[in-house]
Length: 282
Length: 282
Image (cartoon, rainbow over all chains, first blue to last red; front, side, top):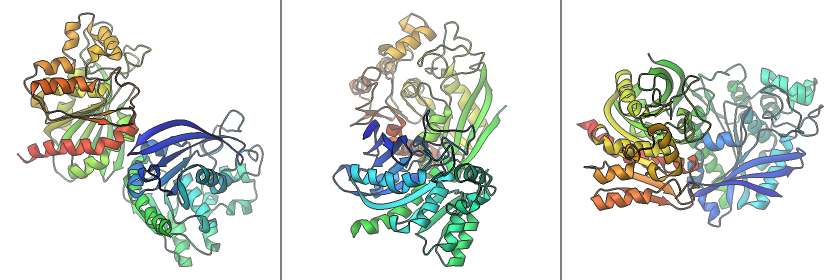
């Protein structure tokens, strides 16, 4: 069921890559998991799900963010899924924001995407089930991501607060309905009826949400896609109107790259550790 | 003279990539420099030169090793050169260990390599001159590297102890004369006379050296190229025979990748900081 592709010792833990057949996406998927030393010595550890941005695979965050040092220290596993279904049989389009590498964490309803592009179900249900059945982890989860993955983490957390302890994002697309990338992708995956788009739009969702998990967002002020695709202030404003706590940090001079993510990932891991650890002791 | 290609804010310092014409290599070269916050606020800081391994450019270490966090903390600049001359006019060969990405940090004497492949002169003289004329650094230097770059750092440090404060290496080729990769490359660059090879062979050089700088080597026991291309014990043995201190750490279960390098880079930066900082205060 799970095929081990690679294994690397890393910060005294294990970084492993697996392939498996995904029911949600009807194709083989690859994901990576970092197991901290604590997990290798017999404890069940909590899990942070990391959702990457456009064009990424499981490998970008794994090799560039430098998160594993902090995960090792805090005793947290990190699961790094791919950003879309892939393969010769999976529809694609020659665009950075549609098709392979651009699943947008939705369940597509339109052709030719509807068969394979079910990243929402995959991330929310299928992958956690697989992880919790096969690895030394408990059911305590948090979720985070970058750019398109920040959108994924936020909309998933807002809709499923019972499944996670905390959420964080770097330079997230908080309102894909109001972003050129998001509009083009949602038109393809969800069709022209923007009512469907709203079910994946964090700003819209938060207006109606009953609660917001502990939430931390970092945004670089020199980000080449800010504010055109990224408007974290919009989400912060809705949170304020609703009386929800949301920590938005504007980071002077930082751009959209992993140089930005790696600078602040330690603070994000520590943030999640605080909430994951509470549950761990229950 | 120096053309800025990219700049990224990173750990409150600056990661910059430049192109310049190299007299040593008779072609354009790209290098990267990480300037810690201390350098940006008016202090001249010491410099660690990092030499990468086969197939790498300046970008592998910059994006994967996670060194900048430690460099920022210790107030050290890191210079990351390319691993060879490159370009359409620079001879190449379809091999991972000869030609582009495989300069082996020697001055080639054989055709077609002799015009461009002068990485030894470039690293020892040209690049430090350029760095010290154009950036807020002092003349306090250390040198480190990985695999082929570990070979580069060690043989350069052994021959030029007056130019550096300390040297370290991850999985270095300590005796290229006794490694398949090194033999093939040296035959191309230096010719059949193995007397020339010995001038770039750390094990041979250390036998005759008058001194050895503070020296730290890490080697993973699960390294796929150990011990065939990598025999750090040989260098440790010569050091012991000569009465030189050399710290060799065998790291159980670690491989040759940047997962290994990133796990221990913090210890290497701290090691160099100890020696660089002493000079800084003189």
